[in-house]
Length: 293
Ligand code: NAD
Image (cartoon, rainbow, N blue to C red; front, side):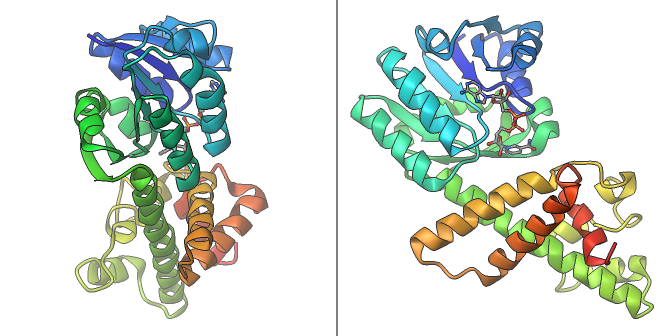
């Protein structure tokens, strides 16, 4: 049983903390939202009055916050000045690579081990304890974190040094955003050419057009019964989250000098979709916009 501080108990952090409680760890929880904090306490966590109080006696600190600015603020103001010596720091938020590296270097200067460990798998994966963790950091810290991450996820991969977990996450999600749009365009073209959607699926899913967006998450109703297309594009993975990750990829491309023309185009299309008030829909719902609806 480890003493764990958990900061950020939203849609993802809440169920992740609950799984640590279920594994008999002592979880000191903090969130700015009283509702999120109360829900975590109901699942077995211990309420901390502040983030600083949560980390005071912790052996492990887990953060699951919205964006880079929140992570920088919480680590600079609350975690690093108050955490005990020897604690291991794990940030699971999806944030920009630069912030991840900045915070990890502050931790290193303070003599603390830190990894970035963003996840994929959504709220369903967080609840079921089947998340994928993409980890950036030193091998020794990864080894220490693994038993804790195993209580929240199934696939746990060391991607490289600090920031590499975030890099893996945004590269993967850039593939996902671009491939989803490509699949949506193909179904819309097929419709206009009089080709049946199921026929296109049967052929492309066993031919060179095969990809996850098609075979696991098909954006038209029918071929993949579990895909959000069959429940009016109820998320799933929201379009707003996809836009966030595509923008992080674009920031990273700009700062590293990479040319990502299709990634840029996908970001623009998701921006249009989200600005049309559809940010809470599943990201595969962009097929409606591509269809002119
Ligand atoms: P969320 O908005 O539901 O939860 C974030 C929580 O952080 C909120 O409860 C908020 O009150 C809290 N918070 C913000 N600032 C804080 C502070 N200074 N101190 C303490 N608490 C603070 O978001 P989420 O859906 O749980 O996502 C969290 C992270 O996980 C994001 O970086 C997101 O990109 C990533 N992610 C989300 C999903 C998903 O499907 N929701 C999937 C993969 C990754």
